[in-house]
Image (cartoon, rainbow, N blue to C red; front, side, top):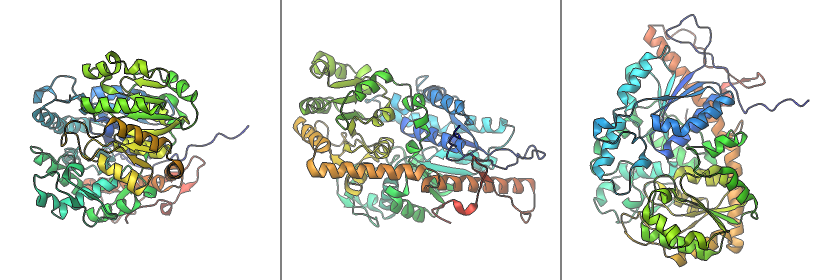
Length: 547
């Protein structure tokens, strides 16, 4: 009988609980605190699985609505023997005048006021108190806390309780470095309120020309000045930075950002390419939320199509197109003649979208070659099928990494924030994408930016494209192989994750010595990592981006 193939790494972490000095050994315990937005929760839950596969116990702290969305994924991890759990903290919606049950950014409507957006983030900031109460009630102090970069309020909790804190950045290193350089070089101050004035990003590894509209930071909005300061301060005082990317794609940007911040930095992605999801079809299909469609029907529909023939279309959980632009997109998709799967979140609730799809006959006209998902789609499952040959995407970083990891060329349609940087990376740096023609966010140019004919032409270029298209598809497969290699045992991202665990173990043990008044001249035993076959992983086996 063949010996079962081991997980890439399982680990034995030697630790100590400060409240129980007689404990001989205990695994490390990480708290993970994602921002309550789909694009941020998904990679954090991925990270929880990756950490647990290396040995530590992991608790993902979120709110009831978001816990329910991710319960299936966490349950799958537990069935696989991984020590991952969800903890629910109350979301203080009513304190800020928000409806009860409003706990995720994607629940805010298109026409919501800026006041309501700010109130939502102020409610997030108020989660510091329940988080601190939860941690104080634990029998053992967690060894480390990993917070989303948009959760700077965790900094005070960690300082108060003496917990090492790392920051997880969910956008690309390209975007992070660009926004940092534009800010520190005074470019934003120079252009002022003119969001359309062109500039070149200074001191950047590649030439990048844009404007504030396409290089806007997450909290770079009127009224959010305090939140932006909090984010910058929390990053500056963090014990280290985690980036959901890999060196094969963004090494030059990762290194430059680490140097600019002067921080210990680890590239630990793409989390979607770890291979853990591949072993659990249910977890893959429910990643982020339960699918609003029969997943087996989608899979069988795709598997009945020729390889690389289907276009997958999705704008993520938040990005939305104006009604007239959506109509032009639908017309272009129809005119392309290509088979497609289109995930439209608003199809369940938006009357104008329903009218376009049903009353105006779009669905009936594309019957047989088009499959619509009205709501949340099993995106990773779809992209993993051989029939999918292109991805029309809003260029959210998760979607970008999923396209990269599955070797699927992208038709780029960025909508806001970091998405225009993701487009530049896909098209200009990696050369695995085709631009749709969107120039700026819809709020800057209301109405139609891309006509039906342009959509049809871009689809043809992506899905065919002759010799250029063949080269693009070949590069996409090469980059996908690099992504998988980075996440595999001994790969750069896997090694960085091992190194980060050891680093947090050292910080935690040092902190316990200091709190207990122990002499720091005593010998220090670092965390010991062992693979499934019992071999010790030496310290030098872990790759760190900065020493």
